[in-house]
Structure formats: C-alpha cells, structure tokens
Amino acid sequence: MDSLITAAGLALAKGDPLGALKRIALRDDPPALALRGIAMAQLGDFVRAKALLRSAARKFGSAEAVARARCVVAEAEVALASRDLQFAAKGLDAARAMLEAHGDRINAAHARYLEIKRLLLIGRPDDAERALAKLDPAPLPPASKTAHQLMLAGIAMRRLKSGAARAALARAAETARQARIPALAAEVENALHILQAPIARLSVHDEDRLLRLEEVEALLASKAFVVDACRHVVRQERAVISLAKRPVLFALARALGESWPGDATRDSLIARVFRLKIADESHRARLRVEIGRLRRVLRPLADVQATKRGFALIPRRARKVVVLARPVEEHHAAVLAFLADGESWSSSALSLALATSQRTVQRALDSLAAGGKVQSFGRGRTRRWVTPPPPGFTTTLLLPAPLPID
Image 1 (cartoon, rainbow, N blue to C red):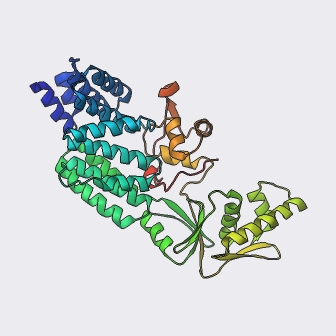
Image 2 (image 1 turned 135 degrees about the vertical axis):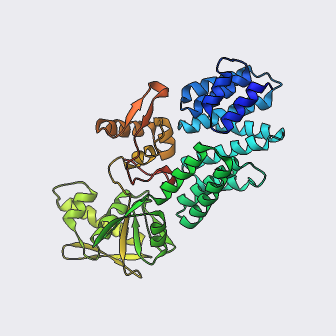
C-alpha cells in the first residue's frame, strides 16, 4: 500500500476527511475509492459515499475478499448514518465472518457494533444485549471500546437503568478522550445530553411535570399504581398488566387514573374513549361492557367501582395513582420522537422502527409536513425526512419499544 493511501487512512481514523481527500481526491483505484467514500460519509454526503464504496467493492478482485468485506461494512455504516435500516443485514454478517476468518478483529468488531446499533434502533434491546455479550472490548482500540460502552448505555437507557447508563457513558467519555476523534467525543456528549433530557411527563391530580430517566426509574420502583401511557401498561412494583393490544381498555384506565382520587363521569368517558359528543343509551351500555372487561383485567391490582356520576379507580394496595405519559403528546408523537435525533429518516426505516405499515408512516409524515413540523428532501427511494430536535424532547435512544401512531 502506497504512502498516500496510508496517510489518507490515518487522516480518516483521526476524523480529518478533508486531509484524506487532499491526498486521494483524484485517484480511482479501489483503495482510494473506498477511502474517498468514507471521507464523503464523514462530510455528510451519504449518497456519494455509498456510490464510491460500491464502486470500490466491485473493483477489488476475488482475491481481495477482505478489502471487499471492509467496503461492505463501511457501506452498512453509511446506511445506518442515513437511517436506511433495510440494508442487507445478511451481507453485513457475511462480511463480519470473512473479517474474523482472516484475523481482522477490529473491523469484525466494528461490524458487530453496527448490527447491535441497528437492533437498538428497531427496538430489540434483548437481541442487542445478546450480540454485545459475544464481544470482548479489552483487546480493541479506544474507538471500538467507546462504541462498546455506547451500546451498553443505549441498552441500559431502554431498560430505564440510569445508573448503568451513566457509568457506561463515563467509561465511553474516557476512551473517547484516548481515541482523540472529535466526532466520537461529540457522540458521547450527545448521549450524555440525552440522559439528562426529560423522557416522560408525570400527571397526578395535583401535579404535572416532566421526568428524567432516573426519576422514571424511581417512580416505577415505588409502590405507586402507575398507568404508563409510554408503554400502554398498568403496573405496580413488579406486577405489570399490558393493555397495548386493547386500546379502549387502556384509554379507560388512563381516564380513570387522571381522575383519581375522584371519579370520571360517564359522559366524559364516552366522549374520550368512543370520541362521541352526544351519548345515548347504547353508548352507555357499551361503556358498561368495557368497564366490566377492564375490571376483570385489573383485578390483581385494582378495582373499578361505579359511582353516582360514573366510575372510580380503587387500587388494592397502592396509596397513590399516577399517569406516566410522553413528554409531548400529539397524534404523531412517535414519529416525531424518532425524527428528534436530528438524523434523516426514510419512511421505510420509520416503518421498520415503529413496527407499522409504510403507508401509515407516510400519512403521518404528510400530516406533520402540512403543519410545518417536518420537512423532506430528495425523491423516490432517496427521499428523507428531518426535523430539528425540539428542546427537552427525548430521542429514539430512550424509546422503550415500537409505539402505535394511529
């Protein structure tokens, strides 16, 4: 490998894409194309970066399988950076196996970290943790150790373990200083900012305020009866009852929780749950049926008692009922939460991350665009959606699971 290629590679490793391009910008041999692709990715031109990396992979001969595998890994990283979550995961896995077989542990580990990051973005922290457990960061360079700690922090945040997340980010900050890569240090700094941002809103009869990660963790560990509108469950200590697939029952539980310690009137419940302004006897009969179903579901933790005006939630052991909601609530809040990371997302990537249809996501994006809350660029398959992150709004790293947006 000639001196210019070596110098360009070192410049890229230090986060200096312009310094790398000064050395190889006019060359079109495979190593130079690959390095130019990485440089363009660092500069934010993901479309050009992907084209250069694919061209480099094609030009590497069959005898240069390791170099081709490195191009596949680099292209996968560009795909993640541009939030193209439907890239060929099997191809990345094959490239990782090729690198491991030829003793390239650093790039093989990098490929594994990309796989883990994708799993986190699509809401699969359990799978991410199992994949991370297969990696030993000890023999890796500081940059890879930083990536390892960032993945640990991401998993801990999704599981609402603030202490573990804070400890992992402290280790990440230390290894990032050793790596001396400004972009990596900025990524750690951004993760620390996320850790401090409000992730939920607490609502009780006499209080309404935003909560940070450690405050949510403490609330869920307390003896309070919690109606969790972030995950569509009700819980008390370790007992959890999921209503994610029963939206009518959850809407009733939330309305009763917000009315506690008082009751919710029948008309208000009908208007809120069934979205009707005028109720007749058939709607009241349907309300009684749904209340009966809710009473059976909540029986281990609470009772739903009829009152003269309506119904009241009566916890069996808890002395306090609280409602935990998203920090910002509107019809398409889940889409906005993903876009709040400042990255550009395709509708297909949002569909995958939210576990819903692409058409549903597209309708949500069109509605948000009409309100001036998001904007798009590009056309067809290259179309991406972005929004500046609102102050104090949580990002995808803290979203616990795919959330319904309809």
